[in-house]
Amino acid sequence: MGVFDPIIELSKGLGETLRSFLFEKTVTYQYPEEKRPVRPRFRGRHVLKRYENGLEKCIGCSLCAAACPADAIFVESSENTDEKRFSPGERYASTYEINMLRCIYCGFCEDACPTEAIVLGDNYELSFTDRRQAIYPKEMLLEAVPTVEMTTPRKVEPGVFKRSVPEMHDPRD
Image (cartoon, rainbow, N blue to C red; front, side, top):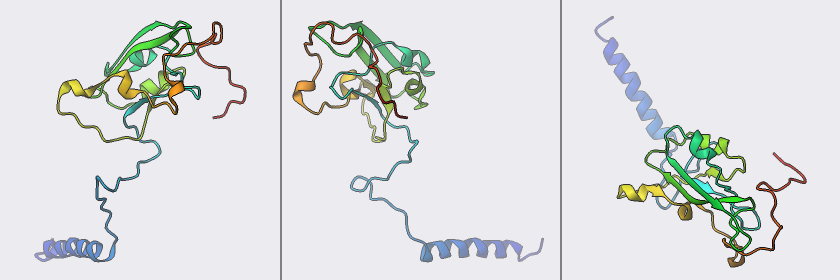
């Protein structure tokens, strides 16, 4: 190793920095105004999905809580009645909480759910000022209904819903 080798290596590094500074486009996003697009497999904030008719997909089976390695999910189920119908099955999740400080965003809850009710969405804007704010209840996780008539609970005719998972006529992947 010669005396001038470190100087040559330093000049190569500074030349690369200068080249990228002068000739390459800057990739800076002005964050709150301009949001960075997320990758297709990104796992962000949890969302509890609904069916097209507005009923909740979650049937309160607690498989997501059992699959969670961080023990971040708490589910308590109750019985559905025709006077107060939340989901198409016999049960619904009366309490559904996710501790976002414990969650490691692994997606095991998504894989374990038989009705595909819990989905890791593309929202990455999570901030808390208190530990209690990091526990998201069911109301914060449920996606909004399109119309007021589709809100839950609702009264339905007896015997309309017999299955917790609706029959698929034309299944698509």
